[in-house]
Image (tube, rainbow, N blue to C red; front, side, top):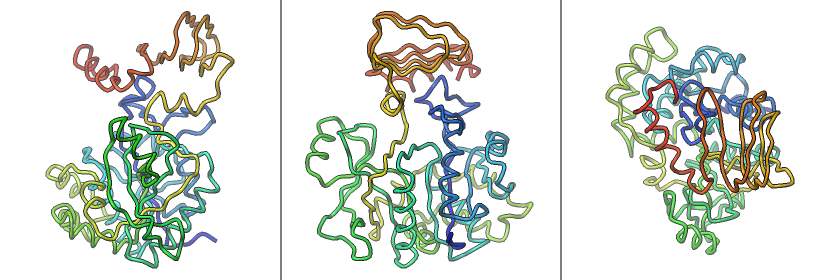
Length: 364
């Protein structure tokens, strides 16, 4: 039975620049059916959490610019469940805003916070992890994050070092956290994986509302006190004007840096459920089905010759011929064509910046 005290916050404000040109400022990757399964990433995330929380307890935090597309893709959400940020200020303000919205409904809520654009291949295992995690944080003053047991030394993820000797009786997969590390260089990532002490940071959090608000007051009071000024205004006609005002002066900071790396009551749930943050074309390539030449192809009229291990994503009715490429990304969308070695895909953010400067916003 779904617990009426459980709430979910889906963070959907990013623009997914590393998936350009499919993902752009008008339609970021969370609103795309990037896996070709008939549901967009945000729809699949919403579907997943309806197995844990009542639909009316699920909130989406996104940019004002994405209000209409969010409503169109998630018609089950009431207007008050779509939390609109006037400016991008990273995850700490985003979560603070959601906390105060939820507090008006249920000051003792248990909350899970998750990105809108991740892939979960083993959904039943994921749901079991979330349910056990939510039960744990409802009984303990913990800030719980999920760590994924690494399968290779990925340099695109942050890492969490956990203490094997401090495992909690309530659930033998929950450990004390030693350290957080931002995206490491390859050699460091290799040493992390070889040590067996590190997990990938999935960016999924669980906590009780009182526990996270206490942590905000202790570690980032300047943000918490800003949002406290709006108590009594949330879910009223005055909310928008108030939020527009405080976001102009609100600090731009992640919840990882502001709270999780500083708090003493942080725990990590070590899990494996077929997770990917789907951050790059390369990560999508790893997930998608390949043809006999190890190519991943989206498009109805694509011909390849002497082409191997490429990801090709083009409009379904465009005839595209590719010859002599190996380990390349070939993507066309909205008058933009990208051809780039997979090994150089970290440069895509710079490509987006350069195109914006030279050719204007319409292409990004």
